[in-house]
Every structure is written in C-alpha cells, then in structure tokens.
Length: 251
Image 1 (cartoon, helix red, strand yellow):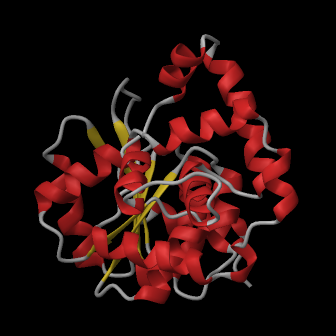
Image 2: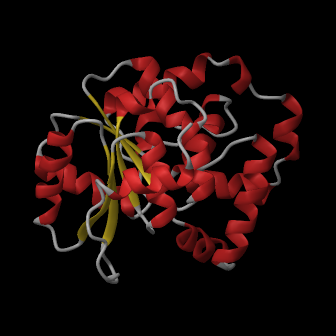
C-alpha cells in the first residue's frame, strides 16, 4: 500500500519549482498521465506572466498531495483520470475549497459533461483546444467564472428538466420571501452581489447571508444550480433560459 510519504516523493518527481509567491499570479497544477502533454502545456503557460505551473501530477492521488503542498487557484486535469472517481472532486474541494477544476477530454459526451459539472468542475475543454483559448479559459475560471459552451449548457439544462429530484416542492415556493425572490431574479440577470446590494439598498454581506439561506432552502450549491432550479421549476420566468444562464455564468 502506498504511504503518504511515498506519494510525496512520487509527486515531487514531477513538480515544477514553486518559486516565490507573486501577487496576481494564477497558480496552476497540471494532472495528466501523459508526460508529453504535461510538457507541452507547461511550455504554453510558461509564456504567460500571470500564470505559473506550481506542480505536476500523474494521478489523482498525486494531484491531491500536490494541492495539499501548494496553494493553487486552478487544477487542469485529464478527464480520463476523473472518470469513475465520483468521490474525488468533493474530497479535493474539501482540502482546497477555493480551487477551480478544469477537465480536458478527448471528446465531449452528454453524460460525462453533466456529471463533471454536477460534481464541481468549473470548466470542460477539449484536449485539442488552441493555446490562446486555453489561456483565456484559465484566466476566466481563476476569477470565479464557469467555462461552458452552448452544447454543454444545453445538456445541463436538459438534465435538470428531466430529473425528478429537481421538481418543485409546492411548499418551497411559499417559504421564499419577497426579498429572496428579488435576489434570485437579480442573479438570473447576471448581477454580482455588490450590484444586488446597491440595487436593494443594503450591504454585500447581507446579500451573501441571504444567498446562503436560499441555497439551503432549495438544496442547491451555487448560482448556476440556483438559476437552473428556479427557471425550470417556474419560481421565476425567462423568455430565453439559455441566455439567462449565460449571464449567470459570466459572473
């Protein structure tokens, strides 16, 4: 059985020198079973002043150890490593709550796409993505956005439409106060917490407190799930659901 110290040793063999922390630099961990792919991505990212690869990993176990050792904003992970490892993403987010995961796959399919976004992946991209688009994706996700194309968005929407667990409990809507409903409407318009606070004449912290209560009531985890739940269960209405969700994702 591999010990924790052995994992540390194995991970160190593929780590990049961390170097001193630099304000504003996006720290990235690469997790991929193919050395040539890690080398290629490392060279691409090395050209960017605001992105630094702090570690590389060949497996999910090595990725977990790398994240424990290095403060990291973004983890770029081979999609095949995540296949079947349903409990890994929640575990990693427990260890590093602020980390954002990007999965790279050979080809996108509906079930894998929906499953990865549900488990907490913030972006799903092709392994043949262009260098410019990869850099753009990393930067956007590092700021807290979600990277999702139109096809993936449609798959996610359809999954929520057909999932019985997402059906609205009639009593739930009655428990939403007018203030909570107003905040939800603002969310689907793509407004940030600061903008909502300004419109409602309150503070950003108050809005955060309201959102936590709303998440608990509706059983959702983030803005995207909140928007999906409310749109498809008719708590709020939008002429174009996809456009409304794109506004949420842009924030």
